[in-house]
Image (cartoon, rainbow, N blue to C red; front, side):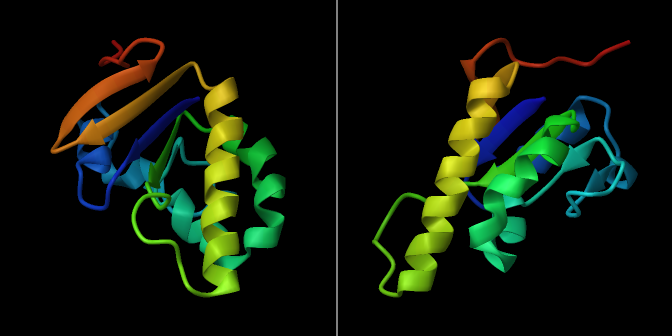
Length: 121
């Protein structure tokens, strides 16, 4: 599994498509059999208290894409702080197990763990 992080609109999905994946292989449903999960942060938003339960199905994905939510102003509400904390902790767990962690900024991928994935034949 490869974890891809970056801001909203930074080019995470475009990077995955450049590796040969199609939109038909990208889902926002953790339980789908598709190899790529997009918007992990939105999945956690629905129920931050059960974020840990997402780890087993996420391990089966080829790529997990998540928008960075931990920067900037600290949220005012307890619920928003819990959501942000849950996303961060889940990303830490995923990063520990990932073969690679990639950060995408302005469409440019940078490996922060392992090697940048490339197009497989």
